[in-house]
Length: 405
Image (cartoon, rainbow, N blue to C red; front, side, top):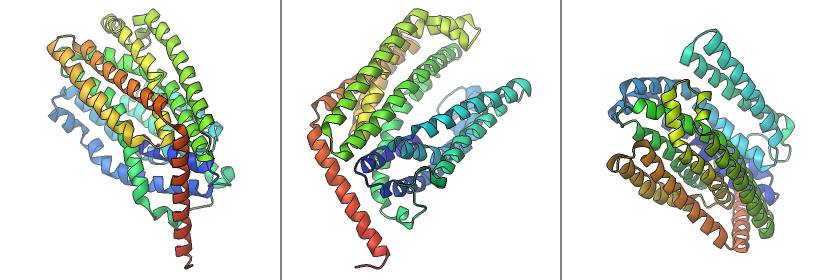
């Protein structure tokens, strides 16, 4: 939810930076921190009561107990997201990606070292792994805060301002639509796991599915990178008033991401179940992964395009429209089809995945149609009018706070 709500900054900061309204970026960043902090507090009960909630939903008690423990450890990570995601969007809007990259590399190295020390050397088990994750997740936050506060963004960060508490309603609306848009996508895979958990002999199916989703998640990191790049570039160009450069950026990113996805599609079809041995020594689980590999390959292919189109939507400020598309394609088409194919037709986990894959296909086709049919010259005009309105409102508010008529 935090990532989705923070993606509102990609629209706000991206378009403002393109229009050279630099002072607004720092104010938007502070407003996002306020909104996401409130959101994290509201989410706390879900993490505190994960185990009884899963048991009440009919999940296996042993699996629910482990999930409940993980959820409690995840609370400090949740609050790190409150700071990390807005900072990342704020820096990306200014094309300050290297500091994010350096800190991410530090985070990865530290996480691996701490995980090995806690889980392998000290044998602390799940507590050791999650503890190392908590430490590692806060390192980039402190690094990015230091970069921003100590001169890394002189044009856009001029210190904390009381203006951050004004006009939160508009930011809340955009943040909520952004959060709903992204959560509907992320929850989609979670529901895939949830439906699989109700099946007989669910342990092997869940193990195989978890391996496939992990591999899919690795590939998704590439697509999410393109999503962020597309959102920032489209927002910057709309803010700067260039429809031509916005369209050129969209075309290039879609083609590049699809080409990478096509290579990975062939790769995963070729290796099939052998990749499972990276995660497990069980032949039964590896065989189940091999059986799911064609679906994994097609998911990777679709995921090379769909996130990029979502990035276009974020850059243009269409989060509300995409939320409706996601509801229809995922929850009115994908999940019902998956349930029918999995439980009624008897295809089990493959049926669930096929249904949800068809939902993703529908969503991708709809987003592609919207992107192709959009009049980008009109989008530039709309962005310019929106920026002018925001600028006038902020100036009026600042003058009123200084006592000027």
